[in-house]
Length: 77
Image (cartoon, rainbow, N blue to C red):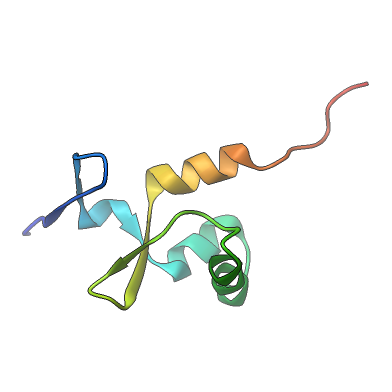
């Protein structure tokens, strides 16, 4: 299997295998694809990349960072 690498803004390379599409992101976050698209349009969701001008992809690292940055509750008082 060929692995395609692409340069990123930080100069490292990522294989396409490490990128998730919007369906995969929606499943991982247990939200609808419409929610993912709404977040993207409002610039409130995880960082994304457009591949070939149309295909939207998310890196696993960016998704994890976004999740970690979200407010959490349940802290003891």
